[in-house]
Image 1 (cartoon, helix red, strand yellow):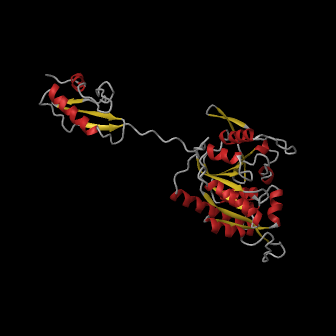
Image 2 (cartoon, one colour; image 1 turned 60 degrees about the vertical axis):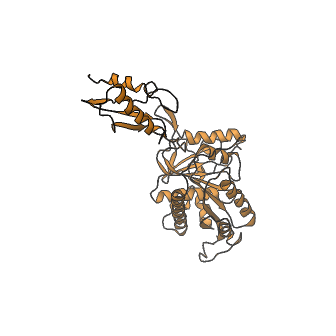
Length: 368
């Protein structure tokens, strides 16, 4: 008798998969790779589950069916291969697939210099050779266009792979988008939370950010809808909380840290930055005047067991450079630019530690 693939299939119809009771032929388990070389027969059986508990018994039953219905001389034992369906690829953990790290810059209250830290940190990261994007997520008080000197810029739309994408403004090696590019800077922006959240999502999803090492988000102060929208929309690598040394700011910074580390959000805190740590006048560069208190941010970081990423002094040139649209981190080899470069290096180290020791970044699922 000449052995054919159909004869093999007719024999295997008698074998049923215990999990469903269906025969292995009609259920598609027998693969289209039946090979016949004289009396030697080989083929593969496809199993849905990894390490299927019935796999070995089905293989033995298949071998016995061939010997029973085709012939005892068929060489079949050891020639039935088990294959398994590829596990589904994990869903993307972020809507920015080409971004390695997403950093949220937050503060418990306004006026602590969060945007100053965001802009100078981004420029310092870019000066270290990293690809950096910066999102002005402070919908109601966008200030980064002024700090970068691009208030009159108008991002254009370009068609990328059939979709209209918003091209970020690039300056000082940083890709920048802000709601400030699209609204009248002299008018107050009065939007409800849902509208603000949707506008922010659009800046993120419709921005042609490209490949980035760091995507920095300058969040609005406090804890509210915008923050929840971001943790639900994208997998945030970690948060940096900015504070000043005074007790009022520290109390709000504590709330901000607790928001990110709380059970519902659970975003790692990369560290705390103490801004306006002391005042140093230009004419007395060695002097330190602790106007807002001394080491308040340092003590809070120690208390909450989060890294202190940097202590940035209150220096007049920081304000002057920001107002002039040229953040001080752009001035190479000055004391303050070196301070922001050290901050950037500390952030890089904290991100690397977080990525090596914590679960992969994923979006936060909030219970309704």
